[in-house]
Length: 386
Image 1 (cartoon, helix red, strand yellow):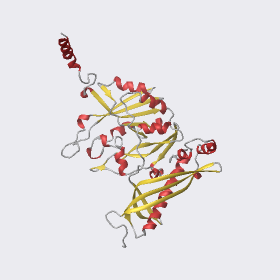
Image 2 (cartoon, rainbow, N blue to C red):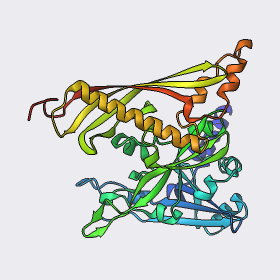
Image 3 (cartoon, rainbow, N blue to C red):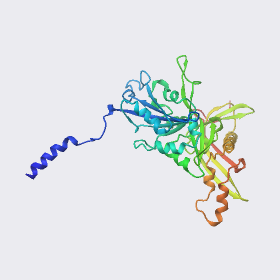
Image 4 (cartoon, rainbow, N blue to C red):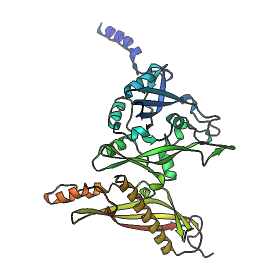
């Protein structure tokens, strides 16, 4: 009898096996990117969702691309609170929205420039399916135009800098991409400066047939320190940043001589040492950089030693110039103050700790030593008489 009852129970439970609480793929819409704005004038939040149909992003076996760009669906919600703006989108959605595939979050300019960011992040991350590994950006562009920008060569929108910034960083290492978990760590940390990459749109480089083609690029960074915004810096003021980033894989510099181009060198994987020094109640910092380079262009014959020295001087000048731009807005772009404060607070270290917390000045960066090693001349010999 017991065996009979057990068999009947198994027959009843069989239909319930598997993911009984899951939703069918076709019954959901998948959010790929989220944009958040705050309009100070209207005192309103704006939420923008980018949704891409997964059924249309499969690659063509013949060419690896699609015959036409996959359309991006944009949902827009507005409200006095962030939750109210999101609920406005839900009220007009035909199917359940799934947030587990969000790979990018973009903050509008006014949002990045206010102190409401802490509250927004706390509210936004209450959604269980959201992940802290999404890429994080800010923008000065219209959010709809940014989310509808098409990738080159009719590829999937998931290949743009919005969703795959690490791939672009390997091509040209200007501003390191930032994931949300790392941004929150820097944003909330003590004596740390968070550098939030800022996306923009440009049609200066690419064209499709005879028409300009708009592409994404990183135009600069918004800076934050201890949850407070410290301002925006354009990309041309951040050239020194790449030499103190350990993940820099490809950085190009031009060597000038009497106002004319002398050489172009591709640098990669710099090694950095930051040496703090406490003296007379003030903290100063020395920076040592060692980096390898490959010659891309050489206008005239020059000795290896002389070229390495000129390259080192160029890099040192970029480091100091970028540091000065950061000092003007109160941003520690190189995280020097983290190195200045002692790891273990001893009675005799209180003065040093207090000095490390003081605002930086241009004199805080004392000495910069750059050692460049030319390791290759590309397909040709490194040096040859012409």
